[in-house]
Every structure is written in structure tokens, then in C-alpha cells.
Length: 66
Image: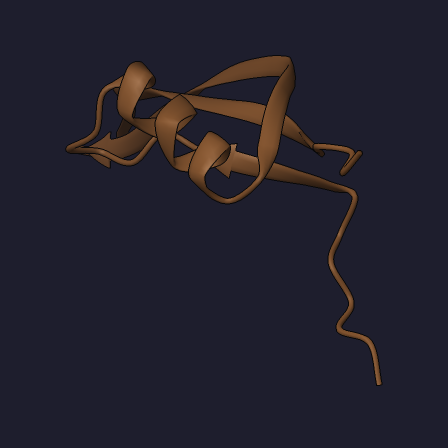
């Protein structure tokens, strides 16, 4: 029986993680970065949407084994 490994997966930069740490986590898992997306994250303060942080994700493509 073979294990299923996704060829493409999105890795999110965690709150207490640098971009470089996220990229290293991707490499360790066997993926290489092939895309990036960002979106703002808001939360409600006194009934008003307020900017909280920027959500950053990298698209990882499974490295080919030679």
C-alpha cells in the first residue's frame, strides 16, 4: 500500500513564525515555494472591523525525487 502525499499544499506563516522559518518548514516537509498570497485579517472592536494582521501563505509544490 502506498501513502498519499499531496503534490501541492498551502503553508501559512504562523503568528509567532518568520517568513524564513515557514519556508524552512516547507523545505523540511519536501516542498518548494511556487506562489504566495496575502490577505488582511480583521476583528471587531466596538462594532467596527479593525485590522489585526496580514495572513501570508505560500503554495508548496512537492519536490520531484530523482
